[in-house]
Length: 467
Ligand code: AMP
Image (cartoon, rainbow, N blue to C red; front, side, top):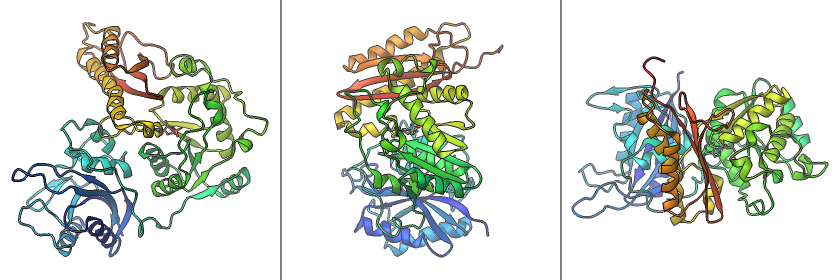
């Protein structure tokens, strides 16, 4: 029996919206269908004004359904569920239940009954935002981009969430079988590892997990036979006065997220276990660690190199997944792996962003609303650098990295943002690049109140006609 992977957007703004969504999800979890994942539920403003008034906000979610039904039968099932929920089809904006089929397998079609992918799904923040939560790296059929890339490219104004996203569903999805085994000590880890066969992938985190971490777990789950996550707030990578003590700790929610996205186990050691001879950073991070983060936080990369080396050793992972959001960390760890000759593959994964461009980070939760607006400027100016390089770096060489850097620095400082650095560098060596004759990385770090944020974007000059 073939199983297709379908994504469905759910919405309700009439009657008991929660009950309508819950009933629909339960119905999509039987008779040849299974709910493989569901985003959190979030309220969004209705898009558009009807007769001078804004209709009631809509409760939205996106679910991934695995189904043995064919596309037309599945689509008819969605229609029937809308009818069962008492949906009145008279063009009014109130809907007890709206089920939009976003994609079905790799089907691309347009005919009288159905258009796939859904014609407006890539222009709606209230679809892309929850979709990004459950499948950031899913490549949308008929397009060359992933959900997260479409979300990053969304430029139409979106009315935004009407209230904060709500916590994940209670039953029946919270208790979906696949729990993530918690390994509290080295003995439990060794026992688990000893039973694993095939390729073991590890995703190392400090907890307070979000969709960025989830994307690493998903990538690992897609490429490995077993996926291990680690949650450890590593003291050696924090300097005195940094946020070690107040770093957010949300272990239970982390385990639920890890299980939802395909991790089989989570290793959560204590500092005493990982540092039996006392907390010290003794792995030399190498020259990629010298500038930027390394200059601002002089002991940071030795701490990262030490803990990652210890965890590579303890987990005996075949492959290790890291976010490209922490680009310098990735460069440093590749150097450490090469220098020590360790047999672990290091994979860099794309940065997951909120709809407005802000890179997701556990530290974003320290930001107040007004700061959140300012924080977005960092990704915006890095995007400006990217576009400017793509448009202006003509073969004639009329483009100046320095001028662009000065312009975007001024843009940030105009908003009284404290700029630690902003530069264009080689992604492997983390050395500044001035002649843009190939892809490079625009990197930046700012301070907002007591919070430090970093981000980066790939930039690439246009292809040269004679190259
Ligand atoms: P942390 O818990 O902050 O140490 O991050 C653990 C891993 O998740 C690191 O490899 C990070 O680079 C990665 N990560 C954090 N935020 C994101 C994001 N927004 N997108 C992709 N990866 C991320």
